[in-house]
Amino acid sequence: MTEKEKCKQGLLYNANFDKELIKERADCKVLCQQYNEADYSNFDKRNELINKIVGKTKNSFIVEQPFWCDYGYNIILGDNFYSNHNLVILDCAEVKFGDNVFIGPNCGFYTAGHAEDVKQRNKGLEYAYPITVGNNVWLGGNVVVLPGVTIGDNSIIGAGSVVTKDIPANVIAIGNPCKVIRPVKQEQ
Image (cartoon, rainbow, N blue to C red; front, side, top):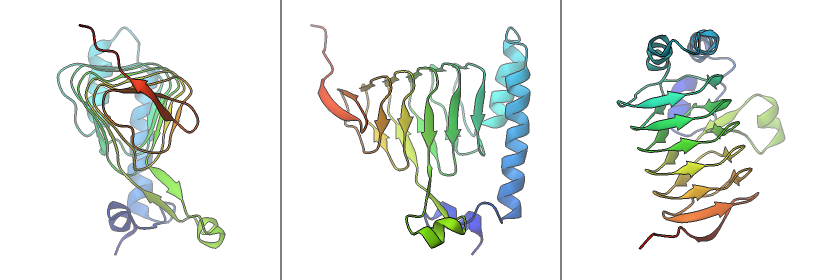
């Protein structure tokens, strides 16, 4: 079994010794660099590059520069997606964003984690678990979402939060670790 196959199955794998994974990351980083250096006012060029980087987009999206990811092909952007500056997505596994997702500056979505056992970790072994963000979700600035997390529809994640576990739909959650503080207020 290849390291990429192990990764796809959620097993420990070594991304640093697999030539295919190394090349895919390098190719993606080159495209990210081109995107980050593109003229900000050239929206057509920026959209063209994002469409080359990410696996799937819908009609409307804005990704402010700079933006970095590992592979790109594991990222799915819903319609009306917006991310502010300094978005980082470590997409060793799938990262799926629903429609109407708004992401503040300096946010990170990290599907990759490292082995708990020190001997395995020192060998470079890691794992990757998917992240899913539902529809109509707002994440404040400096939010970090860790491997395997799902954030439910209509929820709000407060600035500076570290999301270590699933967050249900229709709530406001904040903190490190991120915890639900109350339901989202619905206008009558």
